[in-house]
Image (cartoon, rainbow over all chains, first blue to last red; front, side, top):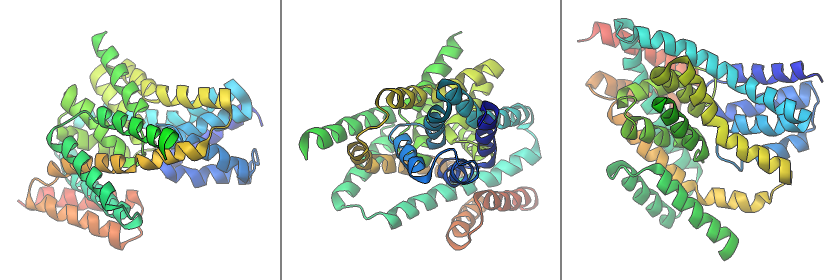
Length: 176
Length: 176
């Protein structure tokens, strides 16, 4: 595999994914494991598990480990560049036009409909999570308490993330 | 210069604390961009979300590119995008470089303990997004159409958004 080929694979996957996140995983599997055979399926899953342990977009984290695994430093630079470029270019073009045309009646009408559409999709994702997980009463209480802190007291989510992280680490490593 | 530093700081922190994936990160981005820095109004922020759902790439990177451009032009857009992936890059790369393998079982347990927290972030983001998305009865109807499409159809995200965008456009111009 040459470096150009590696770059093109990540660029292609970067273009193909709308909405981001886990949509990318089957595409990665198809390209890297099945078509190009750069790594086998077991290693693919190991690398994916590794990438999921860190904050940040999963597709990006995955590009970091796969790029390094395949071609070391040059590989990482090209894989991450490939995965970011489609998003960067398309948003930049839209931003340039949107900021110029946002007062236009047609553009306003478009976003007038898109806003409740997005809100509906987010509300549905809450329903999906509640349906798929059975949270204990204790965890539900924590959730509602944290949500109230965030919504009504407008606390910076960073504090809530940090405190939850510290408590979880202590719990797993020093406690139970 | 000040504005560039602010962009770098904000998007670096968003990348560093972007746990949980998916819509949970929206609460974090919104806190910095709408409440703390006031770079966007809440409605403009929802528009950025809508744009990032119909373009390739994760929300964190998309919003960095868009807001970076709005606040600091092409240079701002470039700096914000790089900053948004800097922390995940350093964390994933250095861990993979030095350890190659982590005790993923323990870290996965820490991450699963974080779930009530990420769910609370999703609740608060959905609350604030919905509040400004359903400002009249037509938008309330569009919100429920979006929910029903998620529940009843197997349409892709893009098709659902396009369908409601067309309905929104029609109702915006035709129904007073």
